[in-house]
Length: 199
Image (cartoon, rainbow, N blue to C red; front, side, top):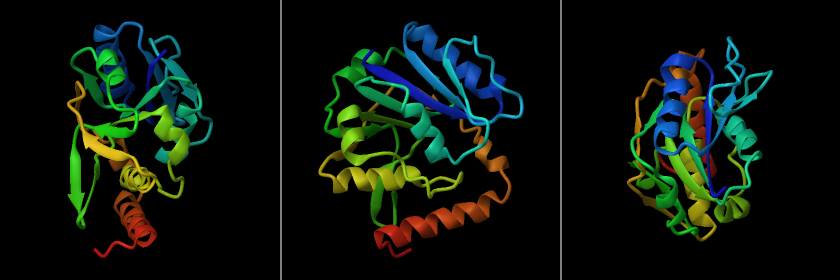
């Protein structure tokens, strides 16, 4: 096993997680998919073609991704939102990537800093072991991806764009979470304070 997908879901099984699994299986029938069921109101089925990890209590996205990552020994982890679709085979492509570089499809530029939009991120085990887990201080409203990219570069690795064969449906389950915009502002403030960024 050289590549594992780690995704997190909180709802919308039939709109998000199931189509994601089916699209991956279409192109990579033997792919390792770890889907963290982050205490969804209706538990995810355990016979749907992925390793379903049910959390009894809902945690932040960072913690849920960390929990999923603990279950793989693969050389590469593809951290993904559950509302993605695979469009082509990807394992061989990922295996050829530089293990000292973190990859994603979309690069964002805010506050004169650049990072990968975290809906799909390819991180080698080499980078993961050196940089460590996602920061659990980020609540469900994002920016853990920005923080991780900054940490990757701080550790001496690179962050680059790659045409990984996935598309993002952008259903954004987290938008329905209570006080989403307020928590998003909290995350931005935490990120900027942590890295000395002037907004």
